Structure formats: structure tokens, C-alpha cells
Image (tube, rainbow, N blue to C red):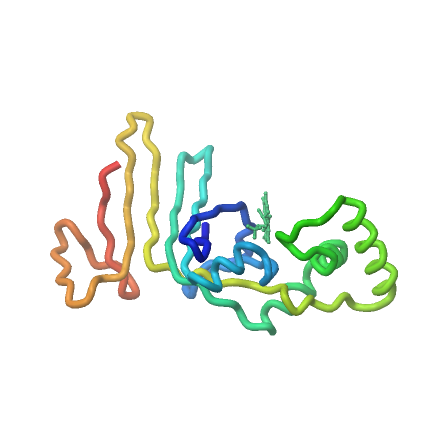
Length: 177
Ligand SMILES: Cc1cc2nc3c(=O)[nH]c(=O)nc-3n(C[C@H](O)[C@H](O)[C@H](O)COP(=O)(O)O)c2cc1C
């Protein structure tokens, strides 16, 4: 989920390409609606849900672009057809018909017939750097477990009763379901 310059939230499904201690990575078009939203307000929220486990994870954090090198490395690892599709599409722009896209894709297939498909300049990754992460475990009684990890506020004293010290500078606490 991102915010438009007018402060209107918008959401879409994305493939989580990876996560490390640094954050959560996804790849997209840097001129898409979400990328424009993130340029004006570089904060995002993510939500993951595992239905069979009744489990969900929510993340809030700041967003930055990943390096061109890293984006290029991932682009090169993608199936050729995905590479061509990324080149053919100006994501989120209005087009007249599907035919326009098919024609463009056919042209690019010919153009790059025996060449490596170059990563479009406007295609790459974003990293969501977590500031708040909530782990939700559903219970059949509806008395669900919610454990929230966050960074301590300036000068906050952790009481180890309501709020507890976690690893790597995080603190955590239980929320009402
Ligand atoms: C399961 C699933 C995975 C998707 N993964 C991505 C992705 O990794 N990157 C991406 O740009 N769009 C992905 N999409 C398409 C987005 O949901 C969305 O349509 C697109 O990014 C344009 O969004 P925007 O116009 O809000 O920028 C995925 C859609 C689905 C349903």
C-alpha cells in the first residue's frame, strides 16, 4: 500500500522477491502509479496472509530504491518473456487496446531475437525498511495473538512488563486482538 500525493492510499498485490535484515524487496516500473506515490511519500505498508496457518504479518516502513546493479542482476535472471513484457509495458499508463501491447511485444521479440534484453531504465527494485512489524496468529476462539515489534521512541524506557526488549534494537509488545 502506498499514498498518493493527495494522501489517498492505494493497494496492489506484489511479488515479494526477497527479504533480509535490511528490508523487504519488490521489483516494478519506476514510472508506475505506486512508484509515483512512493516518490512523493516514501512510506509503505505490506501485508502477508497464510490462510491455512491463520497467520498474517504486517509491515510498515520507509521505502528506497535498490541499486541499479542489483536491479540489473535480478532482471537478467528473469525469464526472457518477462523481460520483453517489462520493456513493452509503461506500467499504469492508459492504452487503447491489448493489440497495442501485443504489437509492441512482437516488435521487441524481433529486435532482441539474438541479443540480451536490456533492463529498461525505469525498471527496478524497491526496499521497504521496516519500522513496525506485527505478527498475527489467528485462534478459533477469536482471542487472536498479536505481537508487534517496533523501534523504541526517543528516550523510551522499556519496562519489560508491557513492552519487552528484542534483538537488534527492536522492542515488542502484545496488542489486543
Ligand atoms: C500475485 C501477483 C503478483 C504481482 N507481482 C507484481 C510485481 O512483483 N511487480 C509489479 O510491478 N506488479 C506485480 N503485480 C501486478 C500489480 O498488482 C499491479 O497491477 C501493478 O504493479 C500496477 O500497480 P500500480 O498501477 O498501482 O503501480 C502482481 C499481481 C499479482 C496478482
